[in-house]
Length: 157
Image (cartoon, rainbow, N blue to C red; front, top):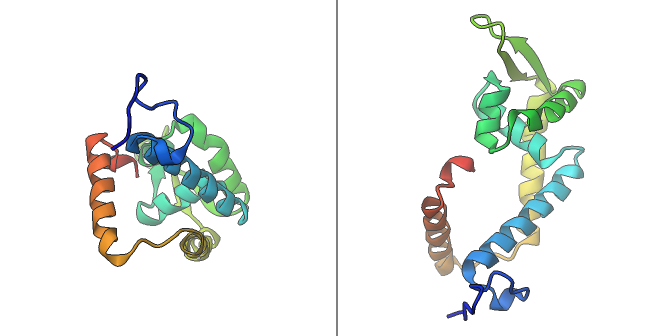
């Protein structure tokens, strides 16, 4: 068990001594940085990769709806969507029922990127990350799912 100390261990800098919640946060931050670096190798930001991923499952969403899926503000998405549109990966269309709403759709080129880039990134992550022993995977997965449930984070994935 970890010594939570006076400040609950929140300022501990050595990963081997961090309380599990801080270590989990540290790992999440490091993984996010790595994902961003891998996406950048393909000319995409992590957010752009997320937009492409959401649109692959939910075609024709608005900025606000995509922002909700990604856990960011709609304003954050505007430059990302602008870049994806300029690169020919998606197109904007006015909603026929409410002209104030702009819907986003993947182009054929955007779909092609979707088929290749996430797979390449997943393969690189698999190569970079240590694989847990098979008998530990369920324990780790159950713990991480319990953490997500406890902090209400399942919807933001």
